[in-house]
Length: 201
Image 1 (cartoon, rainbow, N blue to C red):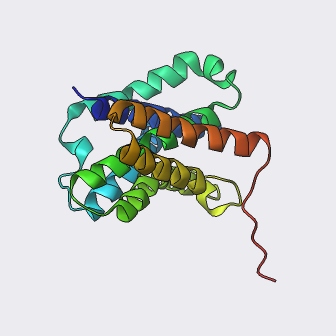
Image 2 (image 1 turned 30 degrees about the horizontal axis):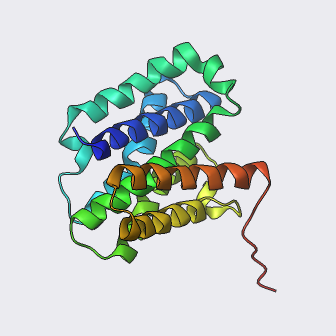
């Protein structure tokens, strides 16, 4: 199985964990935690696949995704304290998830023959809209609508990926480096309180 597939599974797991942790924080029951984990994990990818005309959507054609989402429940139950010790577990897994899904969504869009600009946009959709659904369902203002560096990190990672693809013909290295760019930018933005300026006055 290729690298893209494993990235997709890993991204699904970390986003599912992010969703389940959010559900635990809001004191949802087991069913609520599963639903929040699921929409966080596959919401962005589902929207992307519908928009680019790839149906049935990816997770419906491979039972592995459903199993991965189910696995997030016992992982969070048995290892919650260990995860939260990694400094704000939801932030950690959300950050890893957006890095993975940005490049995955971008690559899948390129594979169906759409333009690089649309591919970057679909990468951002893949990475952020699962989190948007999670935040709405858990009664939080979605991160993408705040001043934090979030979608911008995905944008930079996507542009770096396109640049590397042009100059460096090594898909695995390009994917890993681009994912790291997203993760590092997002991490530094939160650590150093970076925000995009917006002053309509």
